[in-house]
Amino acid sequence: MSKVVFGNSMSLDGFVAGPNDGPENGLGDGGMRLFDWYSSGDTPLPLPGTNMVFHISRASAELLQEEWSKLGAMVAGRRMFDIAHAWGGNPPGGGPCFIVTHHPAQEWVTEGSPFTFVTDGVESAIRQAKEAAGGKDVSVASASIAQQCLQLGLLDKIHIDLVPVLLGGGVGLFDHLGITPIDLEVTRVVEGLGVTHLTYRVIK
Ligand SMILES: NC(=O)c1ccc[n+]([C@@H]2O[C@H](COP(=O)([O-])OP(=O)(O)OC[C@H]3O[C@@H](n4cnc5c(N)ncnc54)[C@H](OP(=O)(O)O)[C@@H]3O)[C@@H](O)[C@H]2O)c1
Image (cartoon, rainbow, N blue to C red):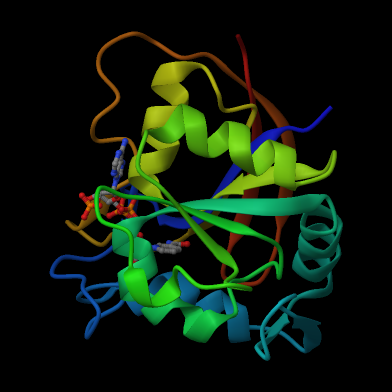
């Protein structure tokens, strides 16, 4: 059955971007450190759907290859879409991409666009992404969407690429969850170069 999986690089103090992030400062002040591990090793790993190639440890490459091969569609928020400049029309993963927003980007509402703009909430975006994923998993790519998925009980798996840095501020991954504890089970820990990959199952 199709699972909903969040994945991001995160600092030890829980930030997925530094302060002052925006289209001209993608990961915010100091936030590029979160992606340093993408060039920390000598095993090449092409990012599907793009022309980017990471160079990472063998352990990281094997893990990511396995995880990425399970993904069939992506859900992201409008800030990430804008900050990534719509990935130049080639969203990572290469599959259909659902952008949760109040304001569809009309220039991408075209025949053959990889983007579907969802204006009726996260639940609807996940439902549409699951339908489009053809039985594969749905990746959730941005922090605000992950938190809403957790609150709605829609998230099955959390994959954190934990980077050994303290950013001190920025976009917090778990800032707006409320006070109800959400229990997780650690299902995998893989040590890479400059990163520790932590995978959790969300207990429902
Ligand atoms: N560390 C990593 O691995 C990694 C990877 C990728 C990105 N990032 C960073 O993550 C950050 C983006 O995450 P984010 O949490 O700040 O923003 P986000 O989730 O990408 O976007 C938030 C925006 O999406 C729209 N939205 C969210 N929920 C909605 C809802 N229920 N209904 C309608 N619209 C909704 C709203 O925009 P509108 O009201 O304008 O429509 C909202 O302001 C960026 O800093 C990016 O650089 C980090």
